[in-house]
Length: 195
Image 1 (cartoon, rainbow, N blue to C red):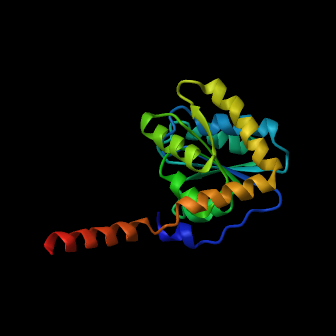
Image 2: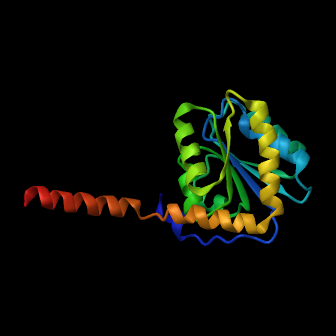
């Protein structure tokens, strides 16, 4: 995890005003758009949505249209300062990729899912370690994932204590010093081998 993700201050707000959705660079299944449309219907009018995607997202035009049609939606493409955008989120929804580590380092209450096999272990691992909600495999069970999404996000929106507890658990497993510990271990191992 880059240093920026551990240095930027983040606090749990009293009320949820911004939900961030990020499903990785390409998002062939348009999970970002489907999640946003689902949540626009079930969350209060005062909640806004930040959708982060890559320029190669095949559904970028659809997402841009959604933004034009709804003032509650903001689409950001190829974000260079991801830590700043994450810091503005009160709740995040993410695919089970490297962003999960960044969200944990910052302590942003998160709901996750996956849609390819290499994301499954990350999503299941975080769900097991910090008891965050893993909605499951969108590629195989989109209806189940979408119905679970409304419930999981609504629960976080309505319960500040739940967001606070989840944030603490997330921060407890990713502190941003992993690279230093690995380097130290390698140096110590090298000394043992030489000695």
